[in-house]
Image (cartoon, rainbow, N blue to C red):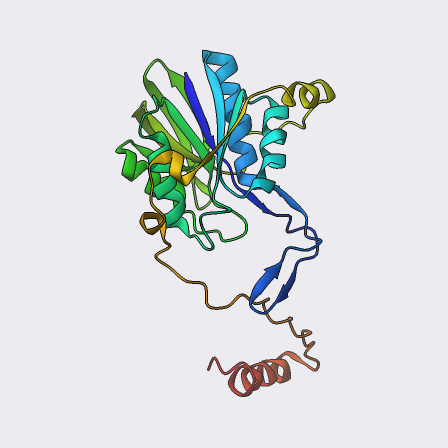
Length: 257
């Protein structure tokens, strides 16, 4: 099987993130593989081990993303591809990413592409479905189970706490949800092997794309932290008094009545 994983380098949201001038300050920030993409890497490795073939992890970004690609290789992926936009693009959005990936996959024989359900930095969930549309292949999102039998695929997907079963065929693109698997940690032998595994670096020119073809269609005006939550109030007195005070607060402070 020709298995591909779409991977993104994201901020570690468990670490402190500073914002200044409407932008996230990258100085001192920690970067990781987008956690939902880790499920995709893990499932890709399982599919390869069961059905044969190879796993290629692809990311669109800057040169620093090589570290996260090496981590994916240490987990067990076979090859990695970095489409480096550092010198060609100042800004990008989901349209940009999909346009670049579409050009990359144009001459590839694909059985299955896996990606994370969302990226934890922007959480648009658009790249996977939009890429599937451009490649004209089926797409199933938020999967929590997948079984491949020849060209037939049986999937379970999360639908707001319930489960939907979907039958489809290869080639296919899926996005992975928590609960699909438990991503493995890179082992020491895996880390050593990852240093020798192929990591190809491409630029936009290598994909026969012009800069104006990948210009973003959206613009970020501002980035800001949510306001701090105010402390809650404890209502005192008997039930009637508490109800009266609650109604008053909902009218005067919360202004929802």
